[in-house]
Length: 463
Image 1 (cartoon, rainbow, N blue to C red):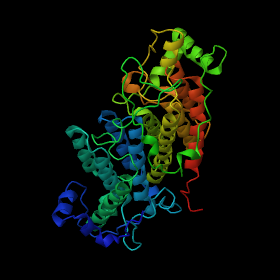
Image 2 (image 1 turned 30 degrees about the horizontal axis):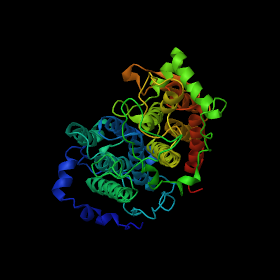
Image 3 (image 1 turned 180 degrees about the horizontal axis):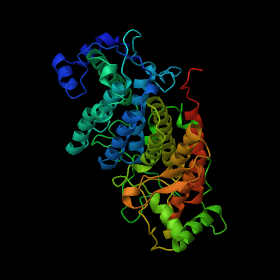
């Protein structure tokens, strides 16, 4: 996809900004002194704090939780595009780093800055994230749309150290906002062609045309709700990094069998046995990692929260935050695409269907309702393993961290000795919940580690 390369001097006209609009916005920002100063606008992104990035990501997680239709795959996609907009908006101010245009599928070029037109990177990031958030969560409630507007206005006032009026002029503000908005528009133009645009909306190619295959061992709608399948075509979406979802296949599941001596039968017995005698710890793990849409920011949001928290507590700079979120959220989005492709290609039945047909016709998992899509592989396992692989690379494989994601729900804080330990617990939580076989958990982990490796192969640095 070839996107035009604009001179920044033309951006105001491209975006339709008026002089009055620029003045009105400038009135909400710290005012520059009328005394002539030596304006230092050529600072790099790493000289600013991560506050703009982490504040916007925090709001995105709230919107993910509260906006209708943001199921786990849809949420992962939104977070990935937001993170990419953040990164591409600030990478011109990050010496030694490169755009991902030309590396991500069908993204061949993006708007460029001009060397003689310096930008203020927190302003660029603020404008880009504001526009991208509005477009990604266009069906947000009026109250939450107001939160987007308020955050965009308040950041320059809240973080004066990054928006010091003595380091920029109104011309630089205008140019920086224009570039941030143009970058968001370019990323969104590309996003609309991936197959997942507005998957929450009434026109989505989701349920109406899909008829699941029938036969022994095949997935069927599950008790008690017998809901229609969720996003059966999601695996056909264009990935970010994977050239094809087949680049990271999950290993084949055991051959379906109802023989008591078979691996499949024994796997179902294990799920049933654990459901009948789960320890208190196992039950807590299942509920902690449930990350239900509508109640939480979903599984991808859980890991994005962890990363955002680490960036904040470690006082990361803007460049580090942009790289971290782009690496992490792109990997998780591809993990959901690959996992969903495998789910609907294999259509493996859920434990509740097998157990009701073999052991106990009245059994249903006691901790949570089985979600409406095929079993293999476990989406939590694919996505969590991909997330852990990326965070290992960024923060270190033996990093001890505290997870505060669910503090407001009474489930935290919880401290983990490593990202792998957290990812393993998240994966096994689905077995403890009674909604996945162990082979679905382990197969998902294999697929997720592959996705992480592919995402980590992206060349963020130029050397």
